[in-house]
Length: 305
Image (cartoon, rainbow, N blue to C red; front, side, top):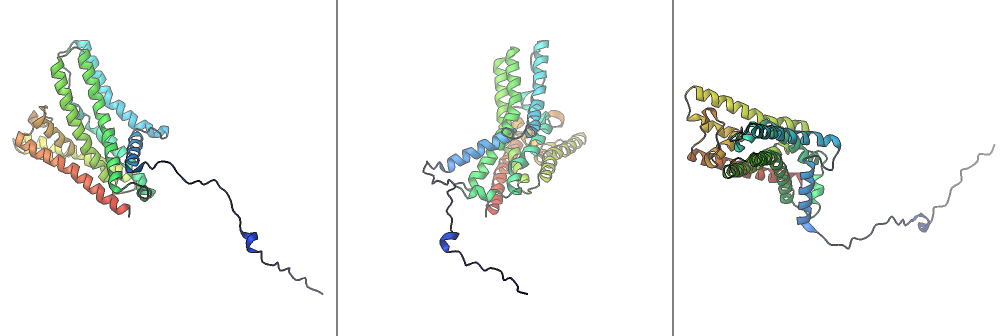
């Protein structure tokens, strides 16, 4: 019985194997906008992302809710002041951020990891650096974006209070002075909290760990320091109270604004640091801001390799 042999095809010629496909790629001949444009774009997108703009509806809920929570007490205070014809606001401008520090800490804990953790998790940071953008551009854009978002969060209720105070026809000079002092204070607070939040968030690509760590550093530290300050005050160790304020970010800001901005201190007994102690508080705040920036630069130089 004959066995059918398989047919062996002759190898195709080189020309028959070659195909040219026109898939529409074109050379870019437009302007090269460079690092400055890339830095501004990264800043604007990060700032929008801090409030969920350009993202899903679920991403907008928490930051917008926290912004509303920050402003609602201010609206209530204005309403009470106008209705009762009070001579002053129930709460000083400079005390507002200290009283609502838990809300600010929660905002940093939610948006700090959002700003940097996803880039670390999905390893997109080297892609940024493959374009005309360097480590310093990335760090500055992210730092400025989160600090700006925090300034919006903390300044918005102060604007509501100031507008309400003028509506209630309170003393213009006093209200303007207090408003200006508080704006300086929250600007410093925004820089400090943004730096701390970004440094902690940049350590791990896991967003959950970053959130927990930021809450622990910002909120729990304030509770611990306030408790120890109260114990020291009850034990008549009043000289130790201002120095204990060095160990929490919000008490640091409270010490600076008490010493230099004429604010009423939230420390036990209402006595904040003296001018000399305030200088130490200010040096520590500025040192922490500079240190956070340096740590971020060092971290992203390694990540971008």
